[in-house]
Image 1 (spheres, rainbow, N blue to C red):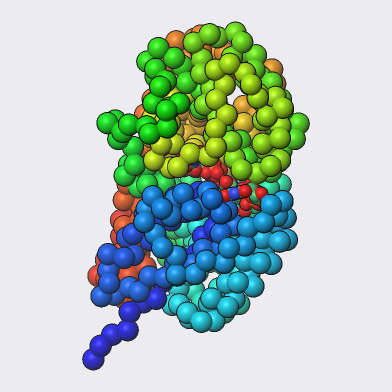
Image 2: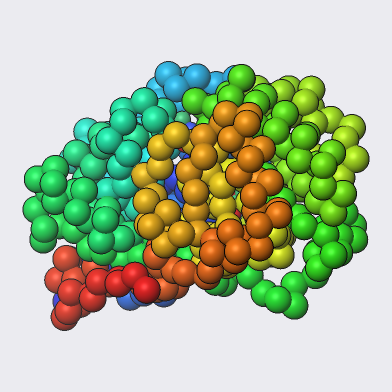
Length: 387
Ligand code: UD1
Ligand code: UDP
């Protein structure tokens, strides 16, 4: 008797989902006797998604190509669901895997539910408990969690959040975050930048501040205040270089250009591919960001992070002391950045490498959990335990 293989469809659409799903896609492909992997991308992001697909040599089986300039949450949700409806009707997978908190994530989970297909949620259980911060991500996570059959919680904190919401403990697997799998496969002390700007920086003599901003709730004035604080910092500290890969959202770009354009030692560049970005992170002095993923990566590399947000669903690195939540007030951003540039003790206290988010084995645990749940493997995978 030949056993039919499990058809597992991964669905993602933005840069961070792609980076964090890539290790899972590659791991699923390691069991050709048991698993038939299918990749569907909404392409909620276009160029920023394609950069990641190229790096990890992933060729989607379905590409909905939905991105449009100035897309609204309604546009993304409707286009993604319509496209995925057709893809699921055709492929009829045994399980769909979605990742994290984007609108693609929620639309993917809801469409799978309408087809009565099991949903696995990678990076499940992160919560701020504030439905408008981050917006719409907190709600995307909660709604996706309600639609999920298998919850892959990266940490014990995320697991506790799910248990508090009444999720059956048997349906939760603590796996670590797959971003650490991707990071460990990408950072290399011997890596050489091909971009002349990054190759030309002296990372020992200069203090590189790496900056990224994109959160919807920071668009407009909050971002403007952050950039004004940065301008003051660059004027005061002659050994600082700011490297700022600017998100492709025109609403971000306009404010960045008006506040930071043309300044000496402020390098406004296009989004970097993941390999140069991760290796730049590893060589930076400190990071200012409102990104979720970078809050997870920087601690593993011992880089202090000032988080330009009022809430975070990632408290572990704050507890570990590597990350500080500072918001977007101009004076606060200036003062906290200045402190890390002048106070050696303050800097060293934060610059401790720690790995609360993963150990590089998350994608293996996720695939093991699926096989075990489907009766194709003997043991439940062990849980990830933070350092
Ligand atoms: C989206 C996610 C957010 C995630 C972020 C990661 C939602 C609602 N938001 O936010 O959770 O943290 O991605 O970066 O799911 N654009 C391009 N090319 C690209 C990507 C974006 O031109 O490759 C421009 C387009 O004009 C697009 C705009 O950026 O309309 C905004 O993209 P969108 O996905 O709506 O929001 P993000 O802020 O990127
Ligand atoms: N990243 C990248 N190039 C860049 C900026 C970020 O590859 O120019 C990576 C970063 O290492 C992290 C992910 O993109 O893995 C974070 O994406 P983003 O900040 O857009 O989204 P979030 O994590 O906030 O959802």
